[in-house]
Length: 357
Image (cartoon, rainbow, N blue to C red; front, side, top):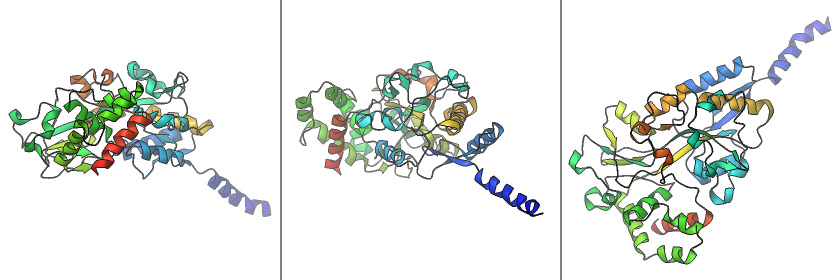
C-alpha cells in the first residue's frame, strides 16, 4: 500500500527533473520573432529534444559587448557579425566551436550561398565557426517625402556639407564604419588603416592619424555635423532627413507610412554578414538541438522574412525576393565587405573616437 501511495509522488519528481533545459539565443533586435520561437520549440518537441529555445534579454550591440556576453556564459547560440569572430587577436573565435556542415540536422545548409560559407574571417583550421544567416549594409536612408530627388546626396562627401548639419544620424558603437566613411571622403579605401596595419606600416599610420591631421579633423567634422547617434538600432525623429541604419528598422517605418529610400552613394556600400554560431561548451543532445534551431533560421520562411521585412540580404539562394541583392548582386563579394580589424588598427580608431568624445 505504501508503494502505491509513493508512486505518483515519485513520478512527479521524475517529471520535474526532466523539465526542458533552456537553449539561450543571443541576437540582434528584430532578428527572431515570437512566432519563430514558438515554431522552433514545437519542432524541438516533435523531434524529442528536451530543450526550450529562448532569446536572452541582452540584445547584441557591438564586438566587445558580444565577446563579454559569450565569455560570461550567458548564451548558447549567438548571432555574431562575421568580422567580429577574429577581431582583437581571435579572442572571440576561441569561445566558439566549428560547424558540422554535414550534420543531418542542418538540411538547409545546402541552400546557402556557397560564396559566403567559407570566408576566411570566419574559418579556423579550415572549418567554419559560423553559419551564414543574413547581411546588409551600413546604409544611409533619405526621407523621400521631405527631400527632393535632385537634393539627395550622391557621394559620402556630401555628409560634410553645412546643409546636412544635424539632419543625419550615425551609429555610435561600431565607429569603424564612420572612420571608413571619412577615409572614403578623403579618397582613401574605407579600410585603409587596416591595410596599413596588416603591412606593418606603423610610421605611416602614426603620421596619418595624428590629432591635427586631415583625417582626424575630417572625422571630428563628421561627428559634429551629425550630432545624432544610435547604439543598437536606428532612432527616428522629426529633424532627421537622413538616417544611418543596418536596415531592419527601415521596412517598419515604411509600413507605417514612411518613405525612406537607400541612398546610392557612388563610393558604394560598406557590407557585413551576420552569422549563427555555437559556443564551445555545447555538446551532445544540446548541440543537436542547437543545430535544429539553426536549421529553422536558415530555412526558406525566415530567410524570406528577413529580406521582405528587415531590408536585409538573405544567405539562402532559394527564396524569390532577395531584397537589396536583387539590385546590388555583388554586395557579398564586394571589396567593401568589412574585415576583422586587428588590434593595432582597432586601437588607433578607438583612440580617434575618444579624442572626439
